[in-house]
Length: 291
Image (cartoon, rainbow, N blue to C red):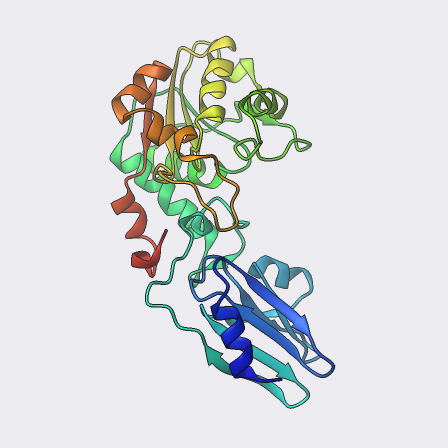
């Protein structure tokens, strides 16, 4: 197998990819030159070399995390061991910012740190930058739990489970139509009236895309008796569609492009505050490469 031919072939491919394939006597791993998504390497106790998209997968098979596979790196494993043979370098690597909070499991390591740590710090930022008088803080399970717990620890306000999640419904923001998204939110989340009635509520979530979930949650909470609802988003607004592995809506459907920040608040008749991009990137190593 010619490494030069392999690199030449993959340099012609545009997009995000992490490829693992077998030959008769080798295991070959290729990471795209941009490094959009994580790709990690580990070792098992029997000496086997393993690769995965998240470090939490290594934990399941009791493998030890070794390192990230670099953007453009080609790794060949054979009976003689492991070799990093070639690099398909790119001047502008692009790490997806969703890798720090919304995509991986919180016990995974991304950019050399646990995703849990990112979520915890993002919650602290929300409590520091835009604290509001409230009676209770709730979260959108399960994605916003860590940020919400960090928010209440910093703000000194009570946390309760104001929304119950059905685990039989998947992500709503990537559904193909708005009607399916709306119905999916109703199936996915149920309000707890005993927690919400007559209360000023802060809702912490990890991200906002179309605004479908946030608008429906506000309506659910109001119908359950909440006096006021404040939304806190532990990441910056998504301002463009992603064509490299995350099925996000079109540019026109994104809430950040459909309305200004002031109109967003008017639209929901509530205060929506998202974390500033500057505060987001300062917490992330290699921040200049985020997309």
